[in-house]
Amino acid sequence: HAMFLEDGVELRNTFDGNLVLKVRSPVDGQELLRHESDGVAGSSGFWLTNPNNAVFNNAVADVSGHGIWYAFSKTPLGLFKNVKMFPPVHTAFGSFDNNVAHSNRQNGFDMDNASKDDAGNLEGSNYRPTATGQYIDFRYKDSLPYTISRLTMYKNDAGSLWHRQGGATFERNVIADSPAKYPLKRASW
Image: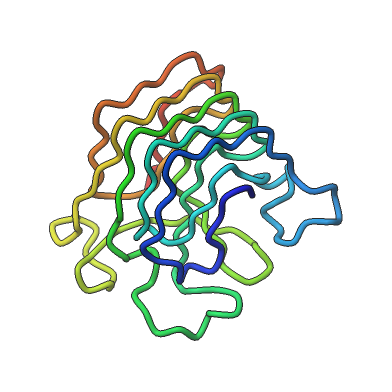
């Protein structure tokens, strides 16, 4: 990954005005985490494991994995797995505005599939931000709203946007010219 927060404990960081180009996955057998393999997900331009961060005015292109990958796990991982905090999968969302993801081999924007262990094995991630950091009823009445705005996505091979979450508002986004059958996909539960 080019820009990444890997353990799920990293909060209140700002990514503003970055350009990420031509990110390639490690050679087979040289991956640090299993999901970095092209056969699994590949390396991404942005790999963010905690939602409480600000992502503004960035562009990512020509990446072997997802352009922007939000992967919120059930617990912190790595050296910080014993930190007492809200689980990333239920932590309040920071902010996301005016980003571009194009010409990536996977999705331009992906909000799913978080690491479930230190080896980088993945599992589906049903992101539900709450005020208490606890799991809530599936009906979303207690989830915190958040917004993904002004995201421009085009020419992403797997699709432009994939998400498995609840409570999001997607506004003023542009999706165009992706060869995938479905440019906008939502996981079913």
